[in-house]
Length: 309
Ligand SMILES: [Zn+2]
Image (cartoon, rainbow, N blue to C red; front, side, top):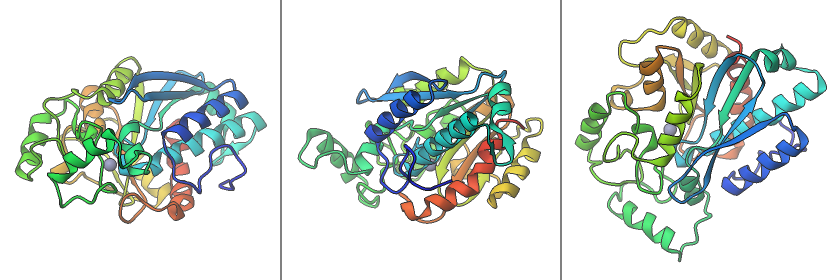
């Protein structure tokens, strides 16, 4: 499944241009794939959503909201390709018929929510450029964060997963107390919820749909977070247990210091439906590509079951 004779190469750093090129190649090979640009980053890079399937049951998977977690974009892109291949050849994927899933569900995937930050972390911003100088200046105020590999935020130095209207003020108070009081490589909540175009793009996209559940992909920890505050969406814990079983990841409650203002927090609050943060892989971000095959095989069950469960 993970050999590199397909379109999506899983043995090279994955960046914005590779992803956009792969999306076009996938669209050419699999014309039933639907692409939609749902917004732009601060630096005007496209945020693209992919739709696989035509069915009523809508689900949503997002990746790479944090810059140094770009391997999650690669996981989702590889999944798109493998699913299309299984659909075209009439094969099963994780023991489920891809055609049945395609007809019954619509899987929406935003592989890369934070393209600007990813360009920095993958080394695509030239050191002499004004863009690089801008990042360097923000990072200089937070010398404890390794630069650029520790960068999680967007171009404005806002942590996009602390931008959602789900106890945003609580997140602000916690992160301010930790010292993240201004634009930073990570953990700065911004000057208000949804001030950043990337966060707003997925927020509006979500509101335009009727998602039965969402998966928000991050690295690392091999853990699945399913709770927000006291919400208990129907089936949420049970589905979490199934995801835990097929992945080998631990099902856990979010640590209190990061339990607010995330995308999955807002989704649960808004809809009272199941939402999961998946912390894939183990180690220091950005995770090395040597982990890709294990991450992918651990997560394929979640990616399939989330569309039919
Ligand atoms: Zn993350």
